[in-house]
Image 1 (cartoon, helix red, strand yellow):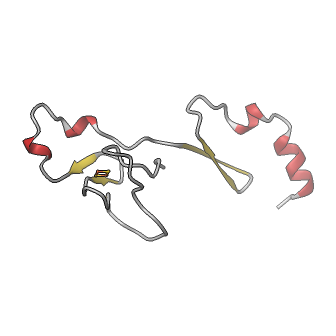
Image 2: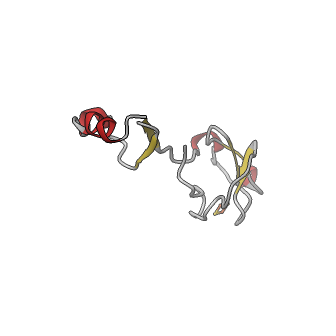
Length: 97
Ligand code: FES
């Protein structure tokens, strides 16, 4: 899972839903693969010392917890069971399935 933000000039990458094998930014057409790695862009080969292998989308951590998907914007965030130690037990009591 990645931030929906281009590493070039921070344009929003995608909207809506669908399936793709690459993501191309609508602003200047930088193209990323599904690992978040920059794969192509107009004129990037003509920029001296530009190394596309150093450009990746910002990864966002997530955790499935009792059928909820939590997005963790803090890369240092603890697992839900550690951060909210009683939450699993409490929620299972009210929503057992
Ligand atoms: S902002 Fe995405 S390619 Fe320029």
